Amino acid sequence: MPVIVMEVIGVENHPNADSLRVYQMKTRDREEVQIIANLENIYEIGDAVAIALIDSILKDGTKIKPSKLRGLRSFGMALGKVEDPVGTDLSEVYCQKQISKPVQFQKWSSIELLHNLCRSLELFEPKPTITYRAKIKLDGTNAGVQIFPDGKVAAQSRTQIITPENDNMGFANWVHQNIEFFSNLASSEHLIVFGEWCGKGIQKRTAISKIDRKIFVIFALQYGGIDGQIATLEICPEKIQSFLANHPDIFILPFYGNSITLDFSDKEQLKTQAEILNQKVKDVENIDPWVKETFGIEGIGEGLVFYPEASNTVERLSCAELLFKAKGEKHQVVKTKKPIQIDPEKVKSIDGFVDLFVTQNRLEQGVNEACNGEFNIKKMGVFLQWFVGDVKKESTAEIERAQLTWKEVNKPVMNAARKWYLERAKSI
Image (cartoon, rainbow, N blue to C red; front, side, top):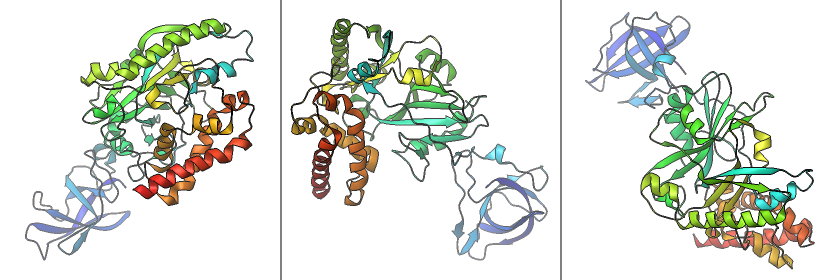
């Protein structure tokens, strides 16, 4: 609801409180509204007053709700006398821009392991040679802010649009409190700011969880992507930084280390480069250099994400299909011998497959993604659906190399995940 200029048509002292007055407010095209106010501002019949009606959200974050003050109900808030004509909408002056609903969810790309990327490029002739830059993979929760050309703003998690009433780790509430900041980024193109919502209370395993607050760390901007528009990505940290104004809770994730070139037509070159990258992942897992430099906190890192190097914005689909990730040993969701491999792990049995993919990290990720971190028997079906789907999505190469079928491994994977979830739920 808006902030509207209304006329005082009735006023009396509150029968149960000497410090309050009861006002009746009216415009020509709105029903009479009862407002209770203190004596900080005193209004008389005929005064024009800015009234924040129910469900208005003021710029300081105050959400106007019905209230009961000493036995009488108030249906808004008086914000002071104004010179504007009665009936004028002053929402632009007093209110935050509302989170836009309904909004089409815009998912960040799923990122493959290198051996899966190699597999997907097998049919390409000639196979590409690609130069990559790495960014540190922060252990938080994937998040995004959609910004529409008209200034409307929406928050999203990894899987859905979220609101302060249906939140994920407090991200929507934070966006809600900073709507003016994001709204001011609006341009002629639909924009999505992708990043990691991380820090205090979000995860517990890495250096970033030791900082004293929650922060939004941006790794990409997306332009377009709705209403049939082609989506493009900006991944260059310097260009992202030049676009965004400073904000105490927003950081731009820089590139880590030097560029590295992968020749997908030369398997021996790939193996050599993979060893170099594995050392980079190991170094980050030992001590996250970005967290140490930025916050002065030492601790382990999760891993790296590798982006194709680009001097300008790139078409999203072309970029997304070439991304790959590598997690350190403590964070792997597939129990591979090394974080980065050119060939998929080979297992000799169904039990070996289950051991490879039903890992503690993947199980915990499933609880966070599907159940918001909650162990509840009623949510076990949702957890199992997410978990089995995630394994199926990532295991095609391993199933083929082991000469198994998904039908053979589906039930064992589900049973192992179910057993783990039940044991954890019963222990809480």
